Image (cartoon, rainbow over all chains, first blue to last red):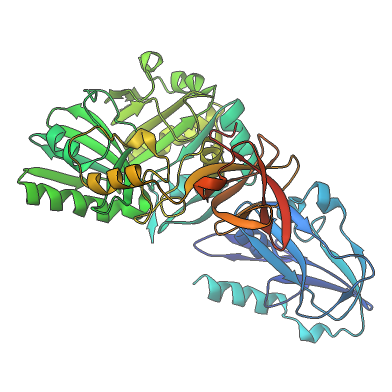
Length: 142
Length: 365
């Protein structure tokens, strides 16, 4: 894990940041494959949110707009939105989360993914690198 | 920010650390729903060291607290805890609910809520001065720790810790300076905040910080599931216990909160009595009740969520949680008396959706 990921340690916890993904300032991770964008929330985000008990996902075929709330995540402590990282069409949602919303906690970068979008256009440079995202977390918790 | 003296132990046991009332402590250990169920069906261990602890010494402690607190202490004896006792302001609003421990005639202990560690002490000293009682209140919060072992299998854990005589404890009784592992704790009590009276056995162990770390680890070795404040919150909500700052405050009177166990209207004199009696005689504008959503509902009513009857707003939620025991969301709300239709399916509005919510009395389980 450590070779493929950065680990940020703060007073409050340890947060894993895989090196092969890109990140948003609002704590989503993004995987870009051609014009397909898969996203979820980061390890940092799931640890802040706490144990997730309910997820509201968009309809397949609906339009996503960059920066708009697309997914509502409800944890034992609070409610948070996850924002669409791109403009495009929702082509798949992670239906496994309806029965097991805690996959977001157990495996945020894997089985806890949220939505796949066919992006109108996508540029990896529009997102934070793992190093920049690590610095962002450090600055939030210093 | 304060840290529980057990913080490094909790972290080694896999705690997700978070902040509560200015303290860093364990929020959960990965799955607060499992932790909740352990306290209901087997045994869980909580660090509750964020609660304030005082040693109170002086003459006429009984007389002083009888005037200060709204609960009648006349049955309070050596080796017993008072049960939650309300400390009111002059307007009858709730400053805190405190637990007293009767150690001897001139030495008591108190456990108070985390947000009030400084202010409760000041309040006690202020009234002692005003009334002329010679009383000292020593804050021992940072020197000591408090561990709650909760659940039907808690006795097994206490036996494993080598504690003698705990089987004979009745609810709200304690043993002074029991031997625990290779040391002596401050006290062991039959108590908790999870519903131990009706569902489970609960014990709390107060000890110096270094011994407490060993005790906590040993509890886990003996099969207790480490549990955090999130599980503690959903457990107390099932029972209808109030959380200071969320469900009660200086602007809440004990009549509307229906906080009967902390209050005695028959007592001659205590701070806030006139205001409470006025509320009692004239009636109040809201009452505290429980809410139970439909089975399988995971959307949680939260502080500020509206309660509706026939589309009309009749109340407001002060706490909510997902109950893994009931497999649905639950809540606590203040509802206008004329709409407090216990047993009736009212509704709550969560993010624009109107969801069925039955109005119930506590406990909800």
